[in-house]
Amino acid sequence: MSDRGSGSSSRSRLVGRVVLMLGLLGIAAGPAVPLVTAANGLTVTTPFPAVVVEPGTTASFQLSISVATARRVDLKAVGVPSGWTARFQGGGLVVDGAYVDPKTASTVTLDVQIPAGTAAGTSTISVQATSGSLSDTLPLSLRVADAAAGDVTLTSDFPELRGPSSSTYTFNLTVHNQTAADATFSMDATGPASWTVKALPAGQSQATSTTVKAGSTGSITVTVTPASDAAAGTFPIKVTVTGGGKTASIDLNVVITGVYTMSVSTPDQVLSTTANAGSETDMQLTITNTGTAPLTNVTPSASAPTNWKVTFSPATVASIPPNQTATVTAQMTPNSDAIAGDYNVKMTATAAEANANTTIRVTVQTPQFWWIVGIVLIGLTFAGLYWVFRTYGRR
Image 1 (cartoon, helix red, strand yellow):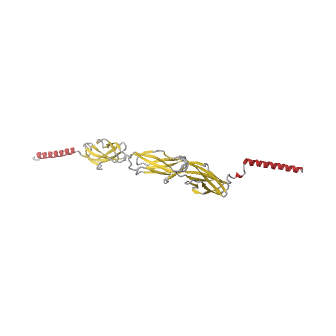
Image 2: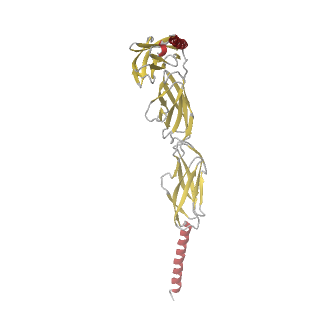
Image 3: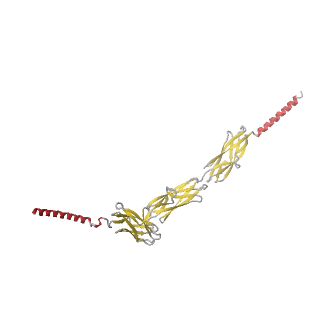
């Protein structure tokens, strides 16, 4: 009897100790009700519930939804000021709710558009998440302040490029979105008349806009094709991007150095002449500037057969404007011993910027002096024969 009583007393003391330990654990852990979640199995949170925005911009909140059991959660924005727009987005769609799995928290974006001209001040919007009997409310604070969300700027690696009008020029621009919201920027580029100027997102051939995340940068490629007849000079290119209520622009320059080309010919385009051996013959040559920039210090020269003499007047042309022609006179004297026939003389015009040449065929004839000598010899021959026949024919 005493043994049984003693055993019962020991068990009672053991049970008492266990109850006491459980009680102490309960006190240390806190109330037992919130063990599932703070909102009875449904919570909605965001890492940045209070933001500063500018009028005319969009504020985006990344919402994270957690549940204890898989369920559909409906979302609603309450307290949106008049004229403002608030919408939930997920998976590229505008949504009113999400199906949430307890193993993975679902993320939904709340975009709040603040109209331009909104007065400075603070507004509170509440996100209400409901699922059956479960609910949670997340208050969001938006303080409207001018220039609070930063600015948008446009920069270029090289604001000026230089070369001939036959080249295509490429500028690499960077859009700096220093605002607090993602923004989609449209692009516009203008240049001189008859020029082709295009602004596209880097790596794209057809897209006309680019999206740049808040605090990030985007790349734009601007290609410029000058008019084929563009004269030498500096030509401005203006590029503008617009998005998120912001506009940024940059001025670029293309410096055309001109195309330097020229040609050598004759006034009547006939590339042949005649000359007498040992006698000077004049021939006019035309030097035409077929490029888009002036040619300077144009000097004519000739490559002629051995012992020929070729000089030019004038010896140098100071400048020939684009699409203009200068005339020089080539004074050619073939070698006095030159045999009658055709000879090639290469005429070259050399400028500081370019050169050109043409070949003239020169037909060399027997000098007039030898014609006279021949006639005299023939006459003397006939006279001698006449004297011989007259003197000795009577015998």
